[in-house]
Length: 161
Image (cartoon, helix red, strand yellow):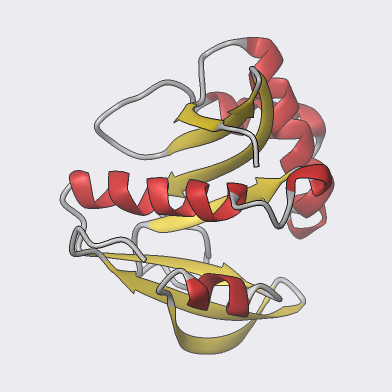
């Protein structure tokens, strides 16, 4: 694998549009009424590095974005009791199975620990095995927005799988 750099999403319109287009194409159907423009607005609120959430990381290979992952306060309207959440993990199909997604997830977990969180959550309809290999544990299967999903958690103790 070529070297992939992971950084906070910069506050530049071109990169924000790229990330928003990935996420809208992949998960826009889960947000009725969502458009590419609303995705751009949502992602632009996650740009830059702040000591508070939400924020987004991107992976770059030779300067080009190849993946993304975010930390958000909440990712499920039905589970407002859980926070914060790893969300919007996406890697270009040409870069999958090369460690990019795992590196993004580990970085978000590391940053969440650095912010003082002790536990983090995610939901996934189909990637349970991937997350288990990174130290995540299943806590619940539930219906969410017409899909069956698994809610998973990761204890944050400074040790990364």
